[in-house]
Image 1 (cartoon, rainbow, N blue to C red):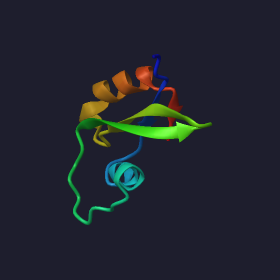
Image 2: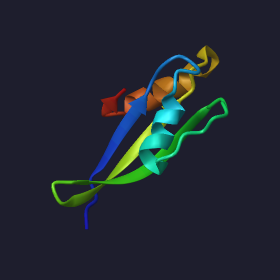
Image 3: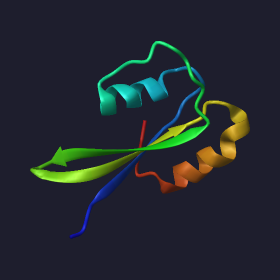
Image 4: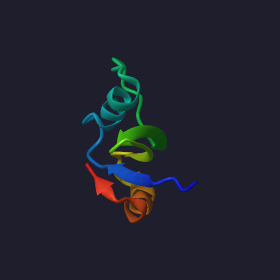
Length: 81
């Protein structure tokens, strides 16, 4: 069985809510405390047209010193926020 996977990259400055957006979308929760992200990948399954698809969410760091990893995620992404 073939699984269609979509890769979405969230980009933005630090402390703008990228991780909070992912948490709200995948877990339906909002964390009150800020925990800086270095770079993380989240897997989430969504139903599209009656079929389950894998969505990989790349949460990038907002700090400039991690720009190499951000470039790596940009090259893998299909959708960007």
